[in-house]
Amino acid sequence: NTPILQVENLSKHFDVQTGLLRREKKTVKAVTGLNFDINVGETLALVGESGCGKTTTTRLLLRLQTPTAGQVRYDGEDIFQLKGAALKSYRSRVQAVFQDPWSSINPRVRIHDFVSEPLIVNEKLSSSEVDRRVHEALDAVGMRPQDARKFPHEFSGGQRQRIAIASAIVSRPRLIILDEPVSGLDVSIRSQIINLFKDLQAEYGLSYILVAHDLATTRYLADRVAVMYLGQIIEQGPVDDVFDAPAHPYTEALLSAALSADPTEARTEIPMNGEVPSPLNPPSGCAFHPRCHRRLGAVCDVKSPTLQAYGPHHSVSCHLHDRQPTA
Ligand code: SF4
Image 1 (cartoon, rainbow, N blue to C red):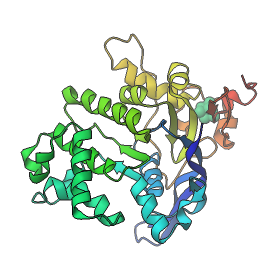
Image 2 (tube, protein in one colour):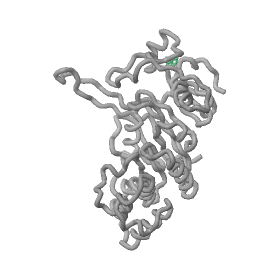
Image 3 (cartoon, rainbow, N blue to C red):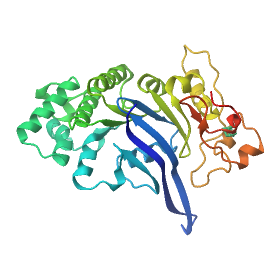
Image 4 (cartoon, rainbow, N blue to C red):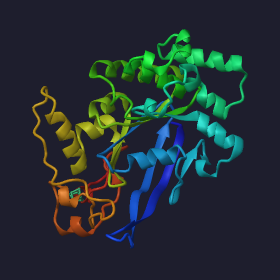
């Protein structure tokens, strides 16, 4: 396994003013101490409820934010130290597909100009080479070269997502961040787009970071999964191991909610008490303890668990497994 990206102790904390008169300063720990690798040709999924730190993580990886601490290495180089041509190369090689990329696009921009933008910004190519690459990318996602002359409103939601994917692959990236890439689509076309991601991965050896609420999509696309809660990874491992035998009570509850909603599964939902706590005021000890159905007692309330090995490639952060020998 060759890592394309290595995330080491990555943290992003913000100071915010709170209180009635906004005179109280507090620190929001958006993400803390993240560690994970992404290998060539592999898909890693980040899952968790809103506010768990997935968005901050992807913004850090796209270099849209700088970390408070830690490193992200791309081919061994710290991305936050990259400048000039090396930074442009990183921006070409690491792309993103968002849930609704068209919401911020001028509707009068032609498809050609939208798809070619990463080439124009990051690479110096002749206009004929740009045209050739745009046509090649449209062809790869099942669109026609003549679609390049059209406008966004001439396409369906599924076609527009194909065009967004063409824009992400036009610069021949190695890693694409898929941020809720099928959430805005009709259920009937989601599987087509998910299969397109699989086909492109097989053809170009792409690595993906998938951010998705939908655990069925996650299971189908991902090789490994990192479960996040209040800015930390609380369980990580091969997707089948984690989904078939979750070690963390939070993962167990998330999966039970998804499976109990599936009429083919006879599962009972495990209740989680209350909402995700505010990151301005995180609970002491294990951050999940106020909602946990397996809470052990005082140890959970006062002592933070640390991520430890649970299986050969599976790790978990929970006092239930403190003395469990590594399998
Ligand atoms: Fe639940 Fe305790 Fe494990 Fe936290 S450490 S998830 S409170 S059992």
